[in-house]
Length: 397
Ligand SMILES: Cc1ncc(COP(=O)(O)O)c(C=O)c1O
Image 1: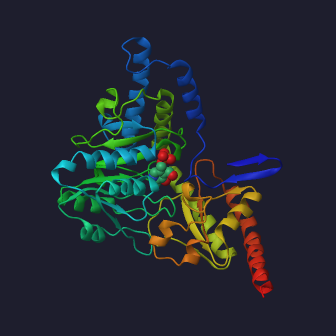
Image 2 (image 1 turned 90 degrees about the horizontal axis):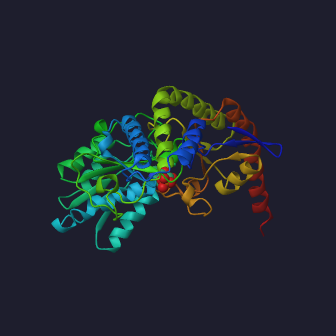
Image 3 (image 1 turned 45 degrees about the vertical axis):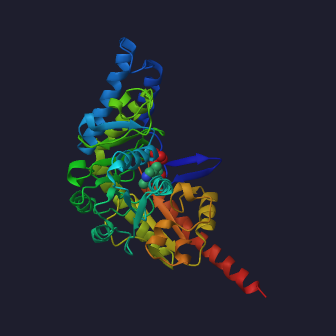
């Protein structure tokens, strides 16, 4: 998406943080906000119109992940879905003595901090590490699991490096031990085919704003028969699983985004892989001292994470922003701090390398011209920052 603002042509390469709305989503949410104001729980015409629109969106999301519409629970986004998955599945078995939770060390904060919160209430938690390329090997889960484990939560694709985890194998281990398997698929849905049956999971989180849908709306897919306690108590919405009057316009937008994604998934994944590879290869060829993190593994097609030797990532991010190019140092929640990425740290990278890595994530409106613009600008910026560091070091007494 090239945008001309104050004579700078802006490039947005931060799609893993969030995405712009598709024009069709804008039209659908605008129309729904105007026309579908009824409360979906109301018996009259206005309520039933809203309910029908919600059910249409339910079917669209179900089709995207090969679920059944009755298994879709709308939430306020990925964070709530992750909280609901872990707390809801854990608390329902708490009384049986299962008081142990497993997650990977590279999860999003929505999972990591939920485990921390439950640990403060006496739950035992294990964080399973990853190998050097950012993969959770099933054997590590096998080592950590026991008959006390209530929930295993491992993300499908990592938000910082894009690596895809062996979820089906991990789910099989969880089930052998009677545990519930949750996957945070916020960064994989609509980027690669996601099939809840093939993954073999019980719970799956997704979020609309990661695939050109509205912010503040997502889904927890709950396999039929999975016992869960609601985390939001109140009315009987969403089959008693998530109380609160539905945000009809946002849910309609999610449905449209899901339908659009399903229709172009394969083609778009190929297009983005070509652009991402052009960008990645171009950077490695033009900028000395660069290396891709997680490259050896299967990744989602839109993401690359690159270390720039002898460059502070935050400085490069700001220099790029001044040139109109938006990228990220990792998860959006940790940007603005100089905390090294917990994902790169878990991969065993040196402190230096965890602090000099940038994430480039592409999407629907990304073009070859934008890739070229980044490749034209980046070598000069890196060189400038390196020479500044050198002269500061030389000036030191
Ligand atoms: C892997 C992952 N999980 C969960 C979330 C949180 O989703 P939301 O922003 O919809 O709360 C994000 C968003 O950055 C994410 O990347």
